[in-house]
Length: 128
Image (tube, rainbow, N blue to C red; front, side, top):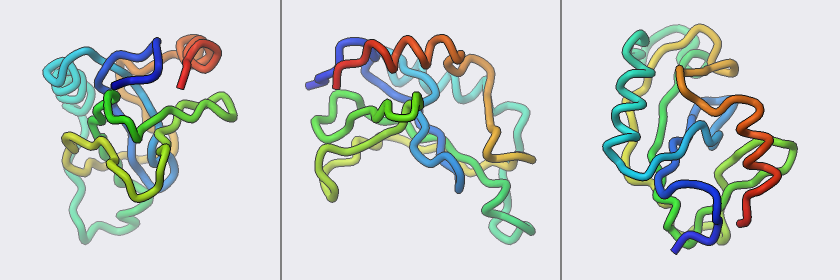
């Protein structure tokens, strides 16, 4: 059962070589997560494994079950990062998107992600 009292059950996590584990949004249902990702990624194309600078341009998203007892959100450095109570335990991953191409993976943003004010509010009020 979730120990935090502020986030909804399902968490969308950005993965790339720069920001692996960045929490970008939370929802009550898997369907809401899927709709958010479908809308947000519609203008991106799938990346090919053999593309030049693959790692520099590859991004993907994971849906994590926030009710997993082993997952928490690390708010140090005023960021929202997925962390684990115990290494090697359940990672809480439910689904993953394909890998998409972006020009600047370290600055990846899709419509509807948390604003800076929302991140600040969560950091100040989350109870892991």
